[in-house]
Length: 333
Ligand SMILES: NC(=O)c1ccc[n+]([C@@H]2O[C@H](COP(=O)([O-])OP(=O)(O)OC[C@H]3O[C@@H](n4cnc5c(N)ncnc54)[C@H](OP(=O)(O)O)[C@@H]3O)[C@@H](O)[C@H]2O)c1
Image 1: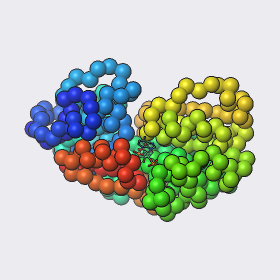
Image 2: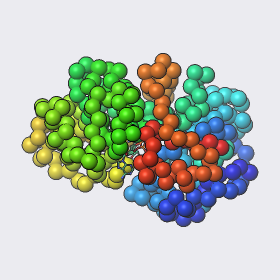
Image 3: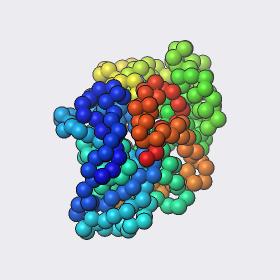
Image 4: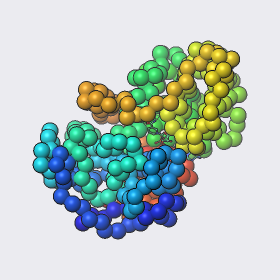
């Protein structure tokens, strides 16, 4: 038995139910991991709601959640490269994020092959708050947009989990960082972690505000907000600039007329998925080690907006959807 948050149908935060559930011994190639900290991600909300993300109907009941950190307490037959007592984290266990969920539990079984070994310098809380979000930032920086010193970069939702990591990483590389945020409190957090300029995008037209700061436009727009920001971002970008839409916190952006890219500076647009970034073992080890080093050295400060008891997950979801806190939200078993 383990305690977990399950859903028995799609819906709002009220469908999240706390209770006991069976936990079988780990199967071949699996380990049982006891969670120390569990991440709350926007994709969890999408699965809870039965949103655009889901390609096949879910088989209820479902324990949602894709990301957690903890300690291995039991090995299944043939589980390789792992030991009981080893600390580890995971972000998804293979397949799309709406399948094979189960992180909102005190413990669960996962394939040994999906684990990231955690060094002592990274706590469970840091790992759960930064693995998906940090590897997403790493994908944006390494695969698409490594700002040169002096480049201006616009980061939408700059006080979000991914946004704050991007702010710090771009600043570390020497960029001038402009961030859009939903409140003055979030603006303060974003500035304290490296934003040179913040724009309250719910109150002012962010295109005009960006053009006042950088009349020729920014080298890149890094956008995890989506529907409310993506289309207008074309007008913030300099010639040959890049738009990276990595997320949809406000919804899925409308379809894009490709000709607009030619009319507004021969722009480059991409919509990446973080799982491609770490598809092979070399990349998984390389990019996670880099993330641990950046976090341990303080280049990337992992901001935890709030931690909730796992039993209080509904409150965490309400706060996430209500845009209440800057940084990452965690669940504690
Ligand atoms: N491509 C990938 O592989 C990948 C990987 C990780 C995450 N993502 C996606 O990237 C996005 C950002 O992730 P995150 O972890 O940084 O999210 P987060 O910490 O939950 O923050 C999302 C932010 O978006 C802003 N926002 C604007 N409109 C919103 C709305 N209608 N509802 C809720 N928030 C809204 C809010 O900031 P303000 O209050 O300041 O407006 C909020 O803080 C999510 O959509 C996530 O699913 C994608």
